[in-house]
Image (cartoon, rainbow, N blue to C red; front, side):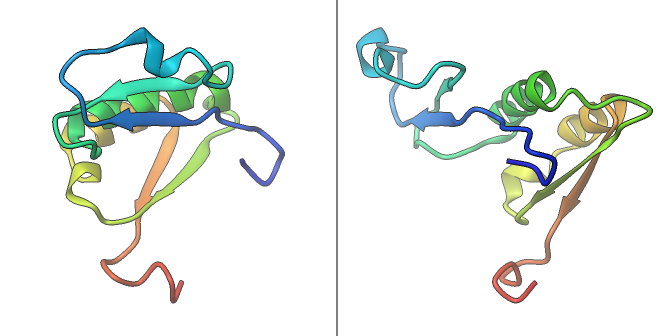
Length: 102
């Protein structure tokens, strides 16, 4: 949720090989369902999530958005940074092990 009240629906990442619709039948409307081998974010899923974020946050040249993330390696991919730039999102990563201090 942003300071202006914009809500981005959640994303669920499950550690499975194939999508099973029964796992997502009771999820909230607008939830982004993703799968990965280990259940963790990766650079490919990050692009999917940022597209989901753009859909809800609706950034524009006149109204850009700041997206703050931790310094996980999945957040440090060139394609995701370029996608953010193209969609008027300033992508800020926090230093490792410092989010609790900041």
